[in-house]
Amino acid sequence: MAATQGWSGRFGFLMASIGFAVGLGNIWRFPYVTGENGGSAFVLVYLACVFAIGVPILMAEVLLGRRGQGTPPASFGALASASDRSSSWAVVGYLNLLTAFAILVGYGVVAGWVIFYLVEALSTSFNGFDAASSQNLFATLTSDTVAVLLWTVIALGAAGLIIAGGVKGGIERAVTVLMPLLFLLLLGLAVFNLFAGGMPEAIDYLFTPDFSKLDGSVILAAVGQAFFSIGVAMAGMMMFGAYLPKDISIAGSAFIIVIADTLVAVLAGLVIFPMVFANGLDPAGGPGLIFQTLPVAFAQMAGGYVIAPLFFLLLSVAAVTSIVGLIEPIGVWVSEKFQLSRPRTTVLIVAVLMGFSVVSALSYNVWLDVSLLGMSLGTLIDFVPNQIMLPVGGFAIAIFVGWFVSKEISSEELGLSNQPFKIWYQLLRYVVGPAVFLIFVGGLI
Image (cartoon, rainbow, N blue to C red; front, side, top):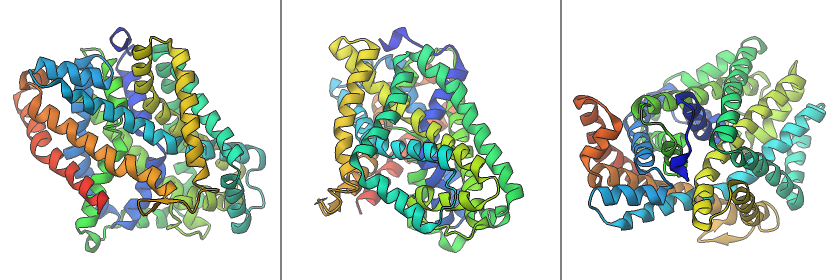
């Protein structure tokens, strides 16, 4: 099924891949982690990591997809066979699919919150909100399991409609509109902040280097952010790679995806933190900043009734396009396995995800005090896919392509000249593998 589909060109592939890579983590986590880890000192380490680790492993994953021309398990199996290796490597493809599903269980619920806040911003503009009313709104939402599940259905359903339309008619058509819109919204909000106040403080917070904060944990945080923000080992990039025409450069595309992903993260910091500083709010508000602190800022700022809906529209676009990339490889595998049409497959996956999302929704209220393996249920739902499954899957991709796939296959697929190929190959073998292993160990510790 995968081999018979494809992007109409490079732009469609890039927009879909950037949409998958750019998610809620970029728009909130990157600025926050940057501010807490030495400002531009962290940014410099992050940029080194993203090009030395992120680009090589992204190229490896897209290479696997395009050469294998199938789902992740099929692509691993095809390249293992072509390189005279064990077909058992297909297990890594199944791990990637399972990782995508596990991430969706928690991600779909948070995406539902975002859409709820978009509707709230459109209807009330958070008029008259103070800290107490903002916290009350968030508490009311998360305590209402039925409401949370309703908004989760809307988020997953929006992504499902895009996927059901197919690669060109659904995914490509949607992302070629949504991703430029996301960039324009980010840029517009950043420009607005130049005049609304708080920009000098935000720039100082984000980009004033504090090299005294650079230690092992900060470097590990930079490696982790570089690895996770690009979206590797989640099956999506491999599936998108299966649709990529042979005449499009994998290396060039990987660099563009990583640069765009990083640009979005930096722009997000210039959108969020000026609002925070201009309104005297706490920049260390943590994950609750978007849902509990920023509505207060929107209520206080001039033009907040326009900025608030635009901001949550931006987040909604980021959330839905990431869900599309996570569901697509699962959908293709299910479709091929059970001989189902794309629309039926999409409905089935969304329905199954909703069943699992009940557990995630309940972890914020009824099961708030439930703990497993010494962690709350909500923490466990986030920890297992992000700190265990992703690093293991990424490590396996790097080891498989770097040490087990025929060097001739990799060289032919990438089409690089001798020296650039040699640099990529050595980075994948001797830098990416150990770095991802450190993420895994660091996450467990």
